[in-house]
Length: 109
Image (cartoon, rainbow, N blue to C red; front, side):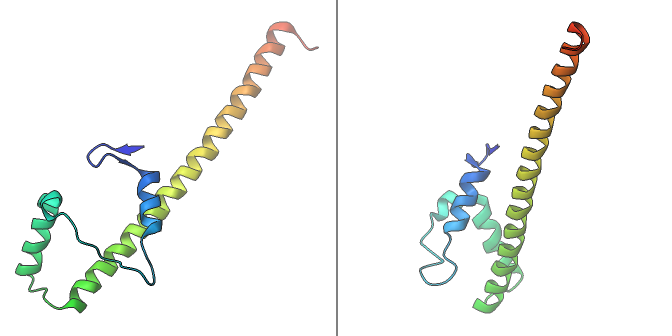
């Protein structure tokens, strides 16, 4: 599955997220502000209108968003695993059906 807007697959996004430093190393790096477009502008406007000025307030919002993102990744991973399980079950049932059809047509061996 690929999000066409960002041209990155779920698995690629998950690998990037896993590489995100948790302790030690830099969590923040210089970003291309122009490349972030409306996302960046929306945040600047919201921080200004909501008087979000302290590092603590901003960090609390970022932490909350990290929690939401982590949960979304976990949910997607769960959905992928369930989809794989269901795919395997469908394949198993298809083989059983093919065997049953063969027996029905050819008679028991």
